[in-house]
View 1: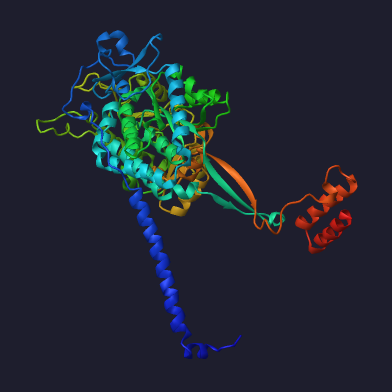
View 2: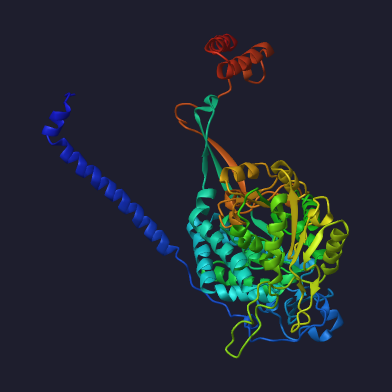
Length: 637
């Protein structure tokens, strides 16, 4: 071969030949890549679909006001029972056997007491039928073998529908839970759009086959992990965010290639029925069977039919700790994997010299979002004693001005909202007396009740379920109010003397879900965050870790275990299957050396052979490894 100098290469014009070829190759490769991406985006683009809006989502809508409404109001007032097919029946969901005594669930708006519907509760037979239908549909449709492009099309179609119908979705959630439109926008719409976007953009990367490294001893092997669908997965979700909590495990389960059976809270059957109808309509629009997704509406007494089913391969539970423990116990019957996201008592640690006025708006949102019915809501403000009085004053002044009321009440003939509402209703009155007791006992033990502290009756909607915005100061960490999850619009303020004490207080409950740390120096905040016993921390912010859907969501201690969202959440809905193959099958494959072949000819040589292998691969020095080579040769003779 001729040796050319750089100048000779330049003189012969080889660079002028190579450069265009190289550039054209790059352009061609880029063109093919973008053409393929364009083809994929067109083939799997969003498919439009629509469903009828429920009349109750309108602010003009009114209904019978139920006196002291509850889930079983139909037992007191028989006129609440249905006289025509309910939405569940009209959508083709399985119905109870005629021989069984039907149970019903009364649906009502907790902000007004308006009757929404009375819907048949699923029996154990109904639940088994829905699980079986989901399983048969999953097998027959071969959804588990679907491409990521097909799965993304479903996500794109749902995202397009949510964006287009964001106000309607928020109104439906407001009507069934009594929350405000702002609370719905933050907790229902933003979070759902963020999760759909994550699945579209990054879900495939989390679930595609993943190459794993090999050790020197296995240099001739190549290994991959395949994340394979489980089949039928279940979710049991809470009522506080009826849209997001329902759709989140469904879209994750579908994207992982599974069919999904979701049990909504009996408190939000009305909205869950409508949201599920949208998801099923989306599947039909994408030429997929709607029965890949099933909704279970039942009382807790029938839930074992879901949690103890041998056909359910994973359970995601979002709810309270006592119910979570029952779900976990039921799942042991078939050793069904469970992800538990339970209660919290999230602290906000405020470091010395923090600018309190700068952050008070963030803290109020963290405490009163969704009327305090928020699993990662701030329940404990832990502040240095030198700033305790100032913080209490700031929080109390703003809390006194909070306006409670129904979000979907008409203020004028033009259909506008009622005079601005800051906080909505609680889901029911069941816990009001317990909340008042805990607050009263805190006072008796030395805490200061600064604002609120009791149930509040709205002057225009007497059956609305409201609890006053409350601030309790000088709280001792050992008090029940500082230990028990309140899930209400109640702020507790706890003073500390040193940062170590603040961390001890923050870690001093049985919970460990989320937390916030605020301070003037970010590195100090991070140091504190690293010492907190919890699953998630926001530094100089509140709850933003959930808007980043690439992060797993979950806690420690009594707040549960496992993660949903992020790669961890998606992979928990799959079977990680390890597959090992030969790198060069025609050149080298595993064979059993003579000293290890059955029947063993010599136990001594067999042991010496294995012992020499250990020395070759893991000996401390080169001489040790060389000695291993010599010994393995001897043992092979």
